[in-house]
Length: 257
Image (tube, rainbow, N blue to C red; front, side, top):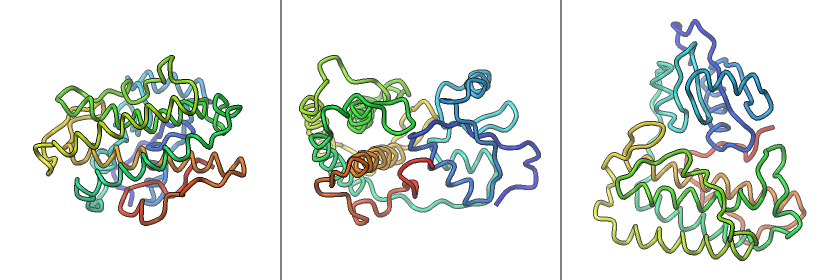
């Protein structure tokens, strides 16, 4: 569904294992949008081009010197002028329930990661299993921090594990604390419609939309933990089911080919 006015070729800046990057590429392919794929992890010139645009994170969709962060597909649709209406998102209360399901699943998988694999990079991403597992919970913690009125920054979502978070048990304790904080936040949330605006590094969006992103983002990385275990011939303890993930705007794939 490419617009006739799109004379300049679309560029997509991405990196392996990035949940929003994979979702963006799948979305553009589904809409018939031809694009130049630029893996900034492995292409130094691509990283330079990204910085020249003024962007500091991926995914980015660019047309000439203009670009949009692609964390929100609605922003991508508007930026490219696509005639498309996105699916309705799940209600906030359901998204909150799914976050609980996802974090509990991650808490089951973290102890299954062999100690010798914890600091090894996952596939072709320069990110260890320890950092990936921590990231699942950090996504939710960053949302909680921003829900009080501060801006959700990119740096807050990718904050690395503290020096005291080294082992599987350390990660699990941290994850349990985040889960408890999130469920307490939701129980006392004064506006469960989540219509208020939140400021994020990719623009101003309703809390409902940011909550949705928090849910599917952490779910996608939890799927990656399952993938990691399966690659090691370890059956995930209580795999996430299609029902657990239904209605979340996840990428179809768990990882880039």
